[in-house]
Length: 470
Ligand code: BG6
Image (cartoon, rainbow, N blue to C red; front, side):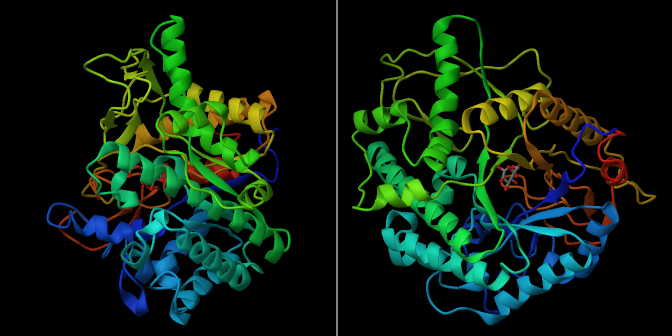
């Protein structure tokens, strides 16, 4: 007998700007994701074509059906539906998604829809400085309501914002260009708070408008190990998780900042401005489930604040802002784990830990909406792609999910990243995650043919046997 429930939601994931292409077709407005990807157009693929899903929709959904997917997790582009973010509705944008949703339903695939995956309509940045302004909250609530009203008869699973907890620390995604670290952090805290309000309002609207609708956040999970059992190292690892993930889930589930996060906001003197009635909005917005995006684990040691690392200093991990306000944390390499060629520490056990931790803390059903291995795959002359490294990675992580289910975690499904190759944030089409290979390179669109990788056939069998054959 399978260790997974009979109604387990096997799927695969993507996001609008990373696959759709047609970035300005049929009235679509530019998004923050487009804007940022165009900055890199001279050296890597951008969102103009991406995987050209908009022109290969039928074929791609056919392949999803062949894979046996029960759900397809994808995002709507807000600027395709409302080009300037809060103005006129674009009927062609609504039709575009109607067609995707209808086709999925015909194929017995449940649409699992994210409202906002890094792609704020750029017009909202020009008009309001994006999430800094409360008008953006109302624009989002309106957009969410439009989507629930239009698609809610067919879409029962909704995700509000993809990885708010990670996005907020990436200046480019938030359009923070402020050179002063304190001012930038103050903006960040206010934007984060506005997104929490928007999130809560969307949850409430979904419950009002979508019969039987389920809605929740998708977090970029962190699982941080201490380098040694020294209490200070353990503290640094805990802080890394508290400050980057737990604070966000606490806000979604309990409607308030955790004590330690509030302490940070106060000591940094960046407590966001709130209005009367906000507490009620936040309290109302409790999600139905938590979606977990999981790729890797982290390892830290304690870094005391000193002259070289003064409290309040801003540092970056990759392109993410780090919280060094307490001078607490230095990145370490975990020598127990292998790393991918892009440096991600591969750790299936970490997934079991994350699932158990979140379930114990929030008592909500969980679902994995991203997990995968980005690699530079090779298309062989005979048209095959042998990605056994990806199969190994996914197999171990599905195994970790089965263990978590046996631990008693209520796991609704597993939807890895990604259904097809897509535009990776910083490595364009060099770094691929898909079950389906897209025949293009960064600067050469080639044939755009869709090619099943070995992992496609492996995953098809996993779904067919409900995870019995890994
Ligand atoms: C997640 C994002 O954080 O990581 C995806 O939700 C992203 O949009 C994925 O593509 C993989 O990261 P990257 O940088 O390899 O594209």
